[in-house]
Image (cartoon, rainbow, N blue to C red; front, side, top):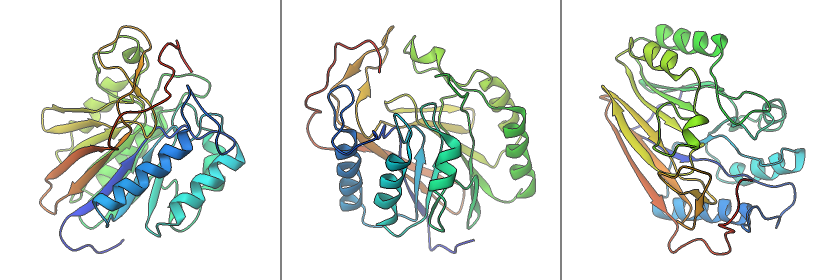
Amino acid sequence: MENYTGCISILQLTDLHILPNPGDKLLGIDTEYYFHAVLEHAFAAAPHFDLLLLTGDLAQHPCLSSYLRILNSLAAFNIPCVCLPGNHDDYDLMQQVLNTVLVNCNKQVLLDNWQLISLNSQIPGAPEGRLSYEELLFLEKCLTAYPNHYALIAVHHHCRPTGSVWMDTLMIENSTELLSLISKYPNVKAVACGHIHQAMDMAIDSIRVMGTPSTCFQFKPESTVFSVEDTAPGFRIIKLHPDGRIESEIQRLPGQLTGLQTGQHGY
């Protein structure tokens, strides 16, 4: 366990959708270019982070080369990075490649009097999510083992509706089980997710639920069918205070996304 002075600063990146070859495009967007641009912008805005948190869909068509390039990009910053899978990822391959001292798929990380618990909501071959019995059991074991630690839970799929009809068919199917479990533990302060390609920040009783923009293209909020828009890529900064408080904000690249194919019905 690391010792930190003051609050713990986390950079959350999500939904990179890195493609097999550099320069490949998805919906007209060079996703890898924007991944690097977001990293550079984030570290220019806040030169120090204690941890990078990547909440899934790291690769669009998972392969060794895409995960190796992600690993090299993250390792260059020389700080701990925790990665968890999204519906597009190959979790087995992720765990093989992203498996260094600094860049890994560790499911529990202790940060002073906080713990970061990363859950796998992936249903292989399906876009929606679910937390298995084993994942929920793991979560409860982490919470009971460290009753004096505040907890931040990270998971790819969202556990509360976004207001977009099509996207909300793809959330965690058993999110009520998750929310019922964590409601028993007052030290759970927040759930951070990806998947929704847009910002979300709401409260369920005393638990904050945060969604984060993609590092590439964004989904149009409150849409009934799949729809993307040219809102700029972004990231979330999360600050964990010793007294259990959380500060968080979304930041974005300047300008709008260019070249996005907005007329598509999926990807």
